[in-house]
Image 1 (cartoon, rainbow, N blue to C red):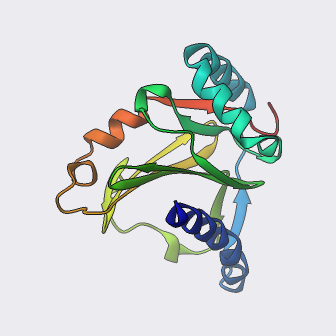
Image 2 (spheres, rainbow, N blue to C red):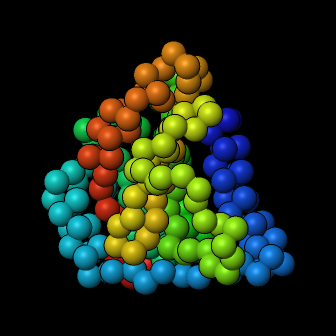
Length: 182
């Protein structure tokens, strides 16, 4: 559990300390426009579809959601995960889940980086991407950007980290929960 707290703190610290460095290089973080109307409709559907997961998460975050400037995505009950640890800064958040032999996070942000060609990708972008110790699944919804990051204790043997099936299945359970404008 201590690892989870450290990982969550490191994620949020990285998001805040990168901004001054970016500014020195002519890179600017620009907020994206959130489609709150679509997000509100999705949040109502999520509450109707899985009220237990939504209500448990809202209760666990006690007031933190009212400051987040983007729709918050969490996993539904079908993913069979506990309520996540949660940390946020107005324009971003991290929801951190602990699994047996793995950790999974949902990282959300409503900003993009502009100002330099050095930030362009040099490989074909896909929703699922293997990383050294796991895999990422990236998506855009409601004008915000989300990364579902899976890290495995043994990424070579753990098929959840090698094949896209596990991440694709948990992405299907995503629920939309509140945000500052909801």
